[in-house]
Image 1 (cartoon, rainbow, N blue to C red):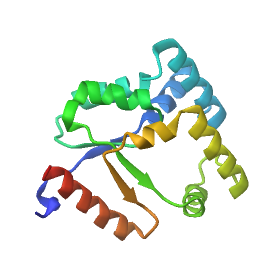
Image 2: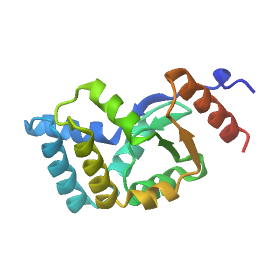
Image 3: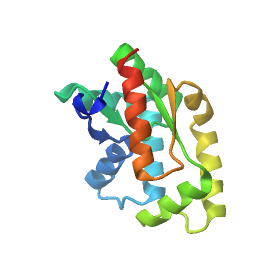
Image 4: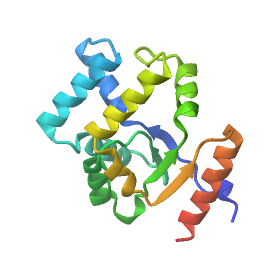
Length: 167
């Protein structure tokens, strides 16, 4: 089956964009430190699944058949998405080696991104622990290797979408 005939996903819906919008509304600079503070405040106030609930709201407003959600961090977000979207929600873990991830992150030149790989690795370890990301990873339906080229990534995405469509 050629997945190009399937409806294209919107988006993607990115939970960190929700936090960036809150920062903008509050007049805060959208740097890493501020975004983390805002995220922590909202998770404390509204629960750890806050971003999952916001993503569900965005999805429910959409008329699209398939939607990509990028940047799911904690297990509670996955639970909220599964509770609200049922079997139609599939979690795909996209993996790449640290060096490749660091190079890509460096190329995007976003304010607050680490400038040295040692900083990146520490930040990565801290986030994995803070958000219980290993548990989130274990909840994935599929895993996608993103160590190659952009073309290889899209080929792998097409294969996974085809597999999921046939389940």
